Length: 330
Image (tube, rainbow, N blue to C red; front, side, top):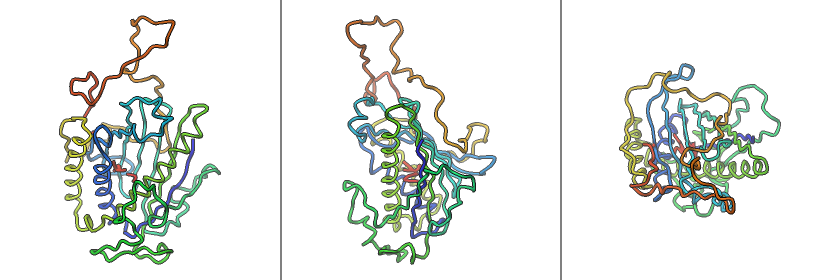
């Protein structure tokens, strides 16, 4: 298990970012999706929690086989996807990632937003954490992002908002910016496989850091597009964009809808406060070799997986980026 805390400051208020986060996640997911790769929304509906109150539950499937390193693609089937479940009780959210193909893999993210410069060292409680837990400050203007994601229009050193008159973000902007808020994220990555654990957990944290940096940069770079939106308007934008994204990746799900009636809290159990690893260690049914199949002693068995891109395939996806999730980058 590898735990790190990320702190990302933004030239916004927490209340403003509530709209900006939803807008950014929807638009970013749509931009990053293509045929067979991307983010499919399965559910997006109100949710009531006895402890945290009213919120929004979102479940997504993230198809990213082509985005994996070569050593991972060699062992991962093309139908591979990660399930993201998010409970958004803004300004507090919980996000969990699991994968049925890798039952010993999970990511748990707790997020809190506050109007400060990232100087709250006890935001996740006073309980002592493991000594090796690192705190990483992410600078949305000056930290390096992967070259393939760089866009001049999203370079916050040169961007200035016409509607808010905020920007350009100069060196040391965090100390001089008003308003300013911070996104605090406590991220725990588990990959309990001997021989690969350290390598995979470090790689996943690098990906998470890049996703958080890109998502928060875009949220501010797009501020003039969403700053005047109401919550109802951004939810409608979210719904329309999700439908377009689902069609774009080619999963052919039924049309999704955002329920107006909150579900009773007993219909779905929320996540535990501590990270958890799925209990089942068995492969999903479609990856199992039929018991009656004759076994060859001279060569290993092979299994032909159905192609999810074909309409006549046996394998059917059930109905669905905040990088947020409602994150990403949360």
